[in-house]
Length: 168
Image (cartoon, rainbow, N blue to C red; front, top):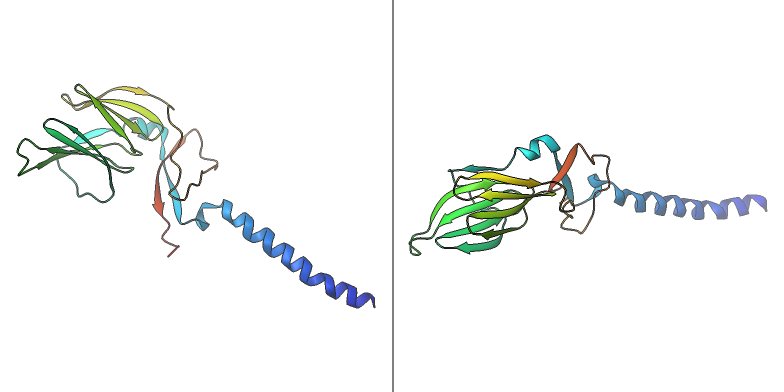
């Protein structure tokens, strides 16, 4: 009789172990559809620059227009600069590299953009960063609305979420 009681408890124990293991696997980024990408804080602070070579649009997001330019945010990468002096023939002039960039605004000759967690002022004439205010924004949330709580806080900054190649 005691043997039957012990045997009845085995499925319950196995179920509890299964639920425990599968629910906590959700906290590890390697099990997510998107994984976080980090950059050293020092590298982030030197990452915003202007490139005269345009790049292909892969993940365009927000658009901002200030005569004669169109600025198109490339999510997590930076900003495309397009000269629209001749609307029939817009010309890709360059790209503002800004890792972690999700949003931008323009006033006068200044572009304000997020460089991951920092607010950066970029002069559109000199094509240089004129000001940086650290830790204004929270780290970006994943496309699945996940927040990374890992050990990389401080020295490393989350700048992007990439599709996990292990997940189909």
